Image (cartoon, rainbow, N blue to C red):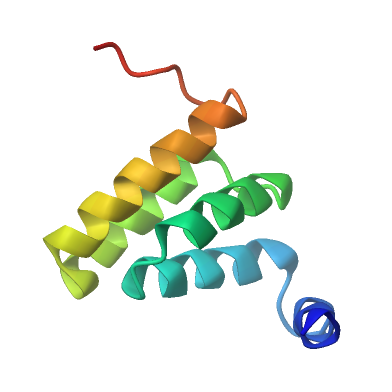
Length: 91
């Protein structure tokens, strides 16, 4: 499995930023919040900004529906807070 993952991410044709955006979109659509959190952090490491991730989620909302996007927003916010790119929510 690790080998196929490495092969996929090292192929020519798309940069790592683009691959991160595509992966985030797929994980949102599949409602995989735990993996989404990991890939939001990977996306930031691949030069995505918090604003770009937010815009991707807004774009996806029309296509995946409210329940999927609500779960994704929570996961993305948690991931960004964990890497200090978003202030913690005030209760």
